[in-house]
View 1: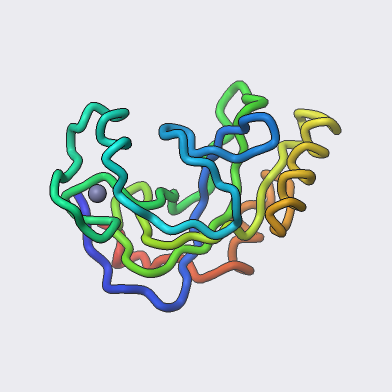
View 2: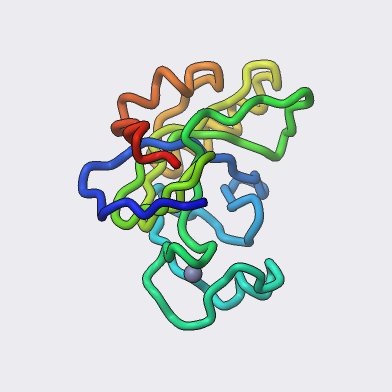
Length: 165
Ligand SMILES: [Zn+2]
């Protein structure tokens, strides 16, 4: 189920996971590198191939499209830690704006900017240093993962509850 939100000028805040590839952030499911703090959604034909084409629109369109799977994904709430923390995963806060498709667990946005990256204190000093190094390169803040929810208000508004299907 999806609800189309009008174009948002004021950023809303969301939470994301990335995969760490050496000292770079990558989207977890597609090989999209986040070289800069700000990214803009595009519906790449390659993504359809990678994800077996199911649920992706064929004709060119502005991303995200309600009938497609494109857009920059974010959750409404901080992702849970899970029983085993993965060294190659990293969470953070993003501000989202432009066209936004709202789903129950999260949303797909046209534009996103990383506000903060989170390290997990349990993973030790080397992990924290690595996260700080990446955040410095991107020019974004660093927080501990338990601070995600509280820190989020500094980067945008929460999407109003009535907009979440
Ligand atoms: Zn698309």
